[in-house]
Structures are given as structure tokens and as C-alpha cells.
Image (cartoon, rainbow, N blue to C red; front, side, top):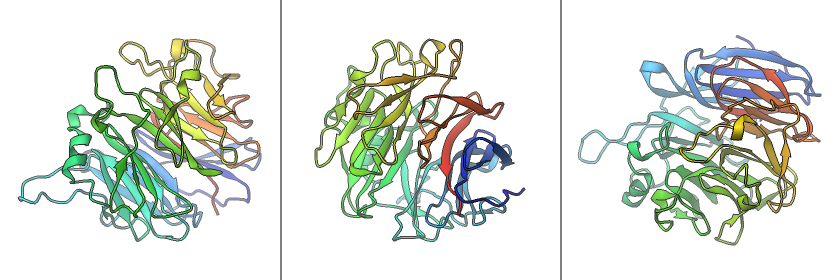
Length: 382
């Protein structure tokens, strides 16, 4: 299968689904799209990422049915693929008994520009891994995978989210490769300032489900954390219990979800930030009432935007169904490109891929009938 040559300024959407991966290649105007796929038909692909340092290398986090979890790597933008020689795996238990097993790699993050072969991966159940050879081989990173305190915070597999506990939102400060963040569902948000030798939780200001101890990281369930490219001292978070902003050096998260319309609420999974404006961000609300339906409130999907760092929110639903659209958009399934105006994209669990070329003002469906969409990334190939 081929991906074809890419012209300057073109955007490619990397779509990871329950039954394979697709690449959608768009023209510079983002008006026409060409489907390339499926890749890995039948495999569960949790995340598909382009290495922005070379514009050619793709990594795909896969779970290959009965064969278990692995990673695939392409150095020619999807023309050919090779399986990782040593995918993420937990270390053997010290007493020789069976330790934890990786169910699947969930999150992929390329390292900083100054470390061209470094990648980070988060797994389900919660684990943090690093590759120093471009994704060919992986090893546990830091002490957290087996640290007793972190293991307590991770809980058991049965304690996790409905589709399994996971480590996600791995962030490298673009100014300092030793400054790292990650989040766990469940288990909270954590930060390292010493290159991963130690991590510490950042929980102040965050709510938890009523009746649980907010001082215990076990009960914190961050859904997605994003760092602002234009201001790396600001982070946004979509959480099980709202929407938050953190402005460093503060250690306290500010609840900006309280400013969302009460009829919509502040619960959801994805979080997207503007590449050049730290005050602008987007969320896709879910119904968080009662037993957590995890669908668009009242069957009316909409993207909500803030342009003042969360003080106010505006509904963007033009072009989206006005009723009876019970969508779920997962935490990795919404993204933005670098265009001006910014292009926004999201994929649904019912297999639809949507685009806005004007930062949410108008929406258009560009693909239907895909398998359940797990992740969408906007990439600019070299």
C-alpha cells in the first residue's frame, strides 16, 4: 500500500481505529482528502504518530488480536512497516513470579528536537517506557512502573477506566528535556524536573468523585493534559471532574469548567490547545450525569471553545447534527493543525471523521463508516 508524494503545505490525518489505521492526505487548502488505508486491517491501533523531527517516521501502537501488544515503525511515511524488535514490556518480577503484562501501548510521544531518536510510550495497565533508537527497542523508564507508591496509585486492572487503566499525556517541556509530565487514569498528574529520575504528583485544586479522598492520587482521573506550545508554562486538563488550567510556577489547578453552560457540563475526554494562542482551547463535552453515558449531551454534539483561558466558553456546532447524534469522542481523537486559521479535527466511536477549517466556526464530515476511532493526529510530512 502506498501513501504517495506529499506537496509542501499539505496536511495528513493519522487515524487510529479499533480495526486498523488510515492516513487521509489533504491538499494545502484542506478541501480535498485522499484515503490511504487500511494499514494493519483488523489490528487494534491505539495511537499513530509522525515524528516531527524528520517528517517521515511513523510509529503505530498496535494490539494484534491473539498475538498481543506490539509497535510498528515506518521510515517512509507508511509505504512499508517493520515491527519493533523489543516493544514495551514490564520487567520480570523480582521473585521470579509472573509480573504485570502490557495489554497495549496507549500513548506515543516523540522526544525533543535535541534527542532525535528518543520516544516515550504509555501503556495499559499504567507503565512508562522510553526508546533511544527511534522506536526499535523499548525499556522501562524511571522508577514508577514498579515503585510501591505508584503501584498503589495505579490500582488494579479492575479499578481502572471502562476500557482499561492507562498512562497517557506524556509531555516533554520544549525548553528543557529533563522537565516531563504524564497522567494516569487513574492515578493523577505527575511531574519530573530531573529527567525522570523522580516524579511528584500535582493534584492541588483538582476534584475527585464525591466520597473519595482528593489527597490520594489513586482517586484522580485526568483524561487528557495539553501543554501550550506558545506558552509552555501553561497546561490545560480535561478531567473526569471538569476542565482545569495550570499556570506555572503555581502548583494549583484552576477549575475553568465551572464557566461552561450548566446544561452541558464540563465532562469530556479530549483537550486541544491553539498552537499560537495560549488563551484559546477546545473541548468536546460528554454527558456526565448519572451513570456517565459518555455521549453528546441530549444527542446534540458540539465543540466548545474558550478564547480567554477559560473565563468564557462558546458553542461551535454549525454543520453538526442538531439531534439524535449520540457521539463519543475519545481523549486522543481530537486535534489541531498549524494552519492559519487553525484546522480542527475529531473522530467518533461510530467511525466518522470531522473537520473545521476555521477554528470551529463550520464543521464538515470528510469520512464515514470507519471502525471505532481511537485517535486522530494532524501531521505535516516532509
